[in-house]
Image (cartoon, rainbow, N blue to C red; front, side):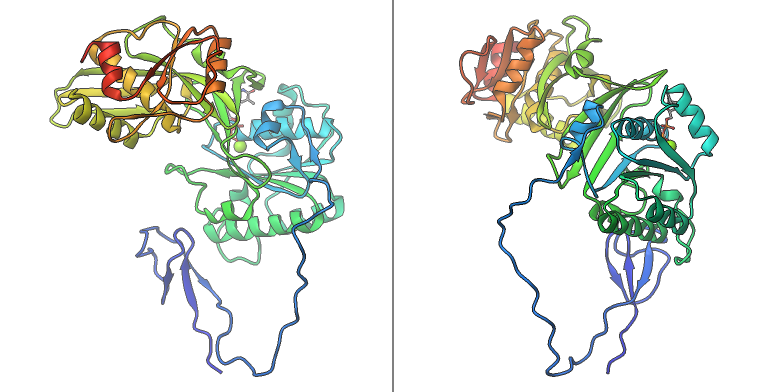
Length: 452
Ligand code: TYD
Ligand code: MG
């Protein structure tokens, strides 16, 4: 029988190599190649048959999986309406963003709601966690606490205790003695996560894994962990801003893209029930370059302020600085403005910013971005109490976007009286907001800014 050749696989990009290397030739990652034992190949023994697996239909009489509510409404919503039993959740975020704080508060809330909860810290000593709990007013919550990094001991403990929920803070500190590499290495993180997730499924324990994110915005090393878990949540926010956003990027039990908004205070994270009001609270009245965008985050409408500054540049390559939006999208919008409306931004520095540390990924923000850029360039303020939304196509046409009605309702709730949007959208006339619809960007520019 042919002996199986050893295989070397990059844990970052999945490329296969014939021999081990320090650096993956395919993606350039260092120290990411591990040896994998392939399944034995060779001729199959004739006549040997597997057994027939049992097949079933898609019909079920089972009720949907029971969900536990923590009472932290923002957290429950991001999970898709509460915690599903025996689920595995990964919470990623920059170091120091507040992951430990958030999960300590969440685990305390679940414990108070009657779940049996464990919090295992691999980064901080038990006394440190207790002190933080005290300061957050969670000292009396029935959470059991452990400070441990040996996964074998943790799994044995979990098997004896059989809690409903366990938080592992963080997966990068865990190590398995069967894997010969340092804690935090890709192999260790992958093996530890695999053990914990398998345990969760087999024993019906929900597991929350905390993972640090590298500078490139990936959960350190193992993108593989993302495939193993049921939900991937990112905790994000700008340093210097007190707002924090918990975003579901993957959820097997609910909508992805759902967000929860929190504010970091002296007493931990406070939920923000009305984020639109908060994101607009710092808005200067009617300054040129400021536009309110009526967006949708997950299932919720949310108004945010988009700010632009355009100034003469002394550089041969003018600056394009973007915070909270996609830089590529800005280039596209600038190109459309130049090609379809004859408004050049050459020799001009462009700064674009979403106020409050929010991140906006919707194409519906295009028109608001264009409006902010034009408003800054022409030094003309957008009419007061106006929201803007719509997608810009490369031809310069404006495309209607989904959920217009929800956007308009939210705008009205916050006291806005008019809206600029693409023509041809489906919304009832009766939203209480003055609608100004435009078929293309050139028409929009002509009407609002007088032909550029
Ligand atoms: P932490 O939860 O330790 O971050 P992570 O686990 O993501 O590394 O949060 C650390 C930051 O949060 C720290 O800079 C201080 C701030 N913080 C507050 O502002 N208020 C509080 O009540 C707590 C507990 C932390
Ligand atoms: Mg921490």
